[in-house]
Image (cartoon, rainbow, N blue to C red; front, side):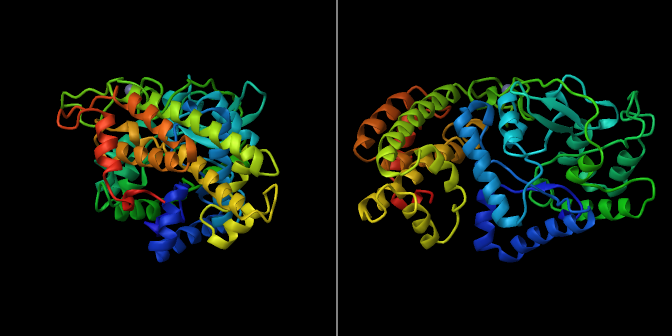
Length: 433
Ligand SMILES: [Zn+2]
């Protein structure tokens, strides 16, 4: 798989890369090398695309949280890949105008969306331009929906010949129509899939992908490109209209991450997702309370605005402990105050968990008793622990709200019981770092 990354645009979540750096060093090295191969092959435009730091549905976040997620993601990318990112992949391709405005303000030049997220895909699959309400510009690539579906869910992932046929036998087809003013711009055919398609979901998928890329490279009539390199040669000619908020895995906007919209993994099972809205409300309430703690205490401890300190904290996430301590020490109002140093570190970690608890998987699946919802509640529990004298009040408020989130499993009860039995009763080992 790592070999194929040298021939395509890819992104990895910063939290996964942090894990790989420690536990899968050879694969991690191959990922970095794949980006360098892209830089060499595409006139300086690498293959790697950045991500927000956590897998968060950004349209559901405040602007301040969007900015921190994007800034932390860029800082992490810069540290690992040694260059500025040109593109950013959005978790679940979840987008709205403010999300794109934050990306553009941070220097991001493009993202990739599903075709249904714009009113009309430009002719030939070419990227479209988006002008944000605040007047910033960003390019949007739209992937091919049917083709991506048939790779992600079969049969193409098992059949290189059929895959190549679908990719190349398109003249006069979908990509051909119209395109006034675009005649000198080549057509674009982009496939977007989860990385786990190749190996985890389909064991032979990585081999099929390598064969397809190899065959395409040998053809004279197609060019295997990456998004950044294409965009550098061919800026968008036409603007597109955004359908927002929207995401690639919910046709109801971004409801999958806050309501019982009907989207679920096992459509054949009669389950409800009435727990989603109360879980979202509970964590929204908790986040607001946590931010108040951070702002109140942070204003007395940090020399600068605490929110500015939170943003630049991204530059040392994952760095060795002494580097983190030095970073925090340099930002204290009283640099020699040891207790302030310790509390400042706790406050920044409180904010990291307050952001992390919105990881989208917590809402994506079918029941609140699943592992993914438990993980977001663990982050909530850790943030509460770090809230100091407010902790008991915050936990009581959270439990009251989680009691409104019913599991499909009567043995579980509600989010309240899940939190009490699944998190509080479990030894500290269960707490994510
Ligand atoms: Zn939905």
